[in-house]
Length: 210
Image (cartoon, rainbow, N blue to C red; front, top):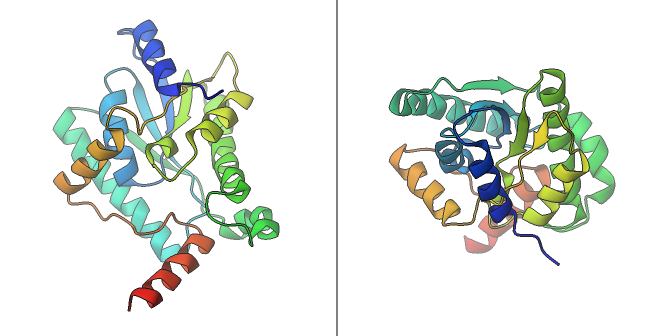
C-alpha cells in the first residue's frame, strides 16, 4: 500500500511549529528546488547540498550549478533569507562505476533508484557529520521520479539525528508552482534528467523530431 508522504510532511510541519530546525536539502537544479525552498524556508534554516555527479556532460553540470547559485542569491534577497549552497565535489567516473552494469535498463528503472540512493546517501552522510537536525531531497518534485522509492531510501537511513523529512513535493500543485517560479526568475530549464543515459535518449528524440 502506498504511503501518503505529503500528509506525513504536513503533519511534521505542524509539530515543528516556529522552532526552525536546521535542514540539509539535496538539490538537483534551480527549477526543481524553487518552490520547495520557498515553502520550507518558513519552517527550517535551510542549507543546500548540490551532490549530482550523475549529471553529464561536465558543462551541463556546471550550468545547472551556476543557475542554482544565482537563483539562491536572488531568492535570498527577495525573501530575506541567508541560504547557503554547498557543492559536493563532482566525480562522474565514480558515479559511472556504480551505474555501468545497469546501463541497458530504461529510464525509471532500478538504475534510477540506485542513482537516487547514491546522491541521497552522500547527503545523509554530510548531514550526520555536520549535525543537521533534518535532511531531505527535492527529487520528489518531478512527476518523472518515483516518490515512493525516494522516501523508502530516506527511511532506510532514518535516525534520531539527522531525521529524514518525508515529502512528496509534487503534491498540492508543487510541480506547477516550480514551473511558474522558473519563469518568474527566468531560469534555464533542462530538457533531460541529467545522466549520460538520459542525455543520449534526449539526443535520439531530437534526431527523430528533426
